Image (cartoon, rainbow over all chains, first blue to last red; front, top):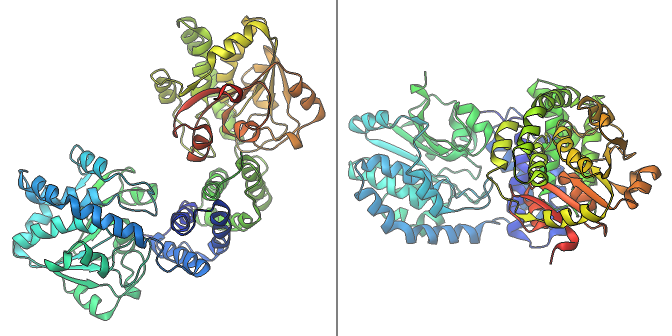
Length: 286
Length: 286
């Protein structure tokens, strides 16, 4: 999807979320953010919001010299999520529909999005998700696909959140699927990297690779050939979160987008309301 | 109050709200907003958010040549509010505590804030306000003041909203108070001007003056001498909305701030949560 005018204020909000991790001083925060705002006129609307967000976060790193502002927060959410693992497994075990429950758990983890949401309440998210229905629900199509197809590529989103994804990955593995989990090559926002995958022990249960890119979402132009080879040869792609949706929703592949709509622009693109949760495959729309 | 780093994204959001009134074209909106963003580095944190918002909205007008982007919306909300007048009067009449009910109605009208909130649901606001308690409630102090003091200056906020203020003004008039209602000298955002006061027939029940300023809030440095004379010689000042709070909360006068906290920064300054409603006089805090 393309950017919209409403994305511009949001880019600054995301920059601020990174700057807040770098300094406690309000004056410094203000001055850094003002410097960052100088690149706003360079951002074009024909790029995805994820692409522009990456540029703005790179600008924060350039100005401050801090390459990975969210390092500590990512470690924190990995550990917090890991401690919830036994409970999440019980939730699946005690549920009627294991796959749907695991999918909902994966969505619950999608609140660990420090750029847009800032504050995170995992417990609240987990509680709410079970009283919330998917606004768009293509899980039946996913189930059918899983009966006849084998190779699953899972595109992860944020650190911490990937422990919640692990719950869903384990359901795929139980069905004897070949699952490859993809994370970012290098830190950007609080997106998961290989280090985060190791911290939530995702690499002990399935193959984890990097997209070869350090851009938010799955920006195919910047991905490695190795990744693209896997990407185009997968039977089912699970795309987690807004960034991956923004960069892939116009691709003509078998992609299931699983996410919570956290802004009006993504919600509009999906035809849902902000706050809605979806598991949606473009080819089954209309 | 001073600005905070979080205000910067919000300035852009306010600029966008004005730009949306000027053009339907997404590309034009984006290009205008990018031009506006060039003045962000000039804004300083020692000014109030209201002062900086004014600069950004003036920049929109400078770039587009449109002096009053919200003209139609203001007329719309004046007419919509005016049509609700009989119902609002009945609400007061049928309530146990007329003054408190009128104050709540005034707060309900405070959702007509097109810069920050964008979408407005007056009916919903009116319904919710009666199941919501004031988070800070100095209405007892106001009642005591009204028993012994006479000259009330009411600082209005937005067009449309001033019809809701009129309900409260009429309660003061019933108590034989001398009420002067102040609006902006010239259009800025959707703030009320003399024209709006006439449209909701506020000028038929009490004296309406202009602050002499076209800045958001009550920016004393830019107000007229005539206004300042009234301001400093009033017994009770009713200050409506965030803009007036931002510009006056450090003044040492008998000011009752009536507002709904629409952003974390104002909520923090008040020590309440975003979304809370208050009627608060600084001198009774701790």
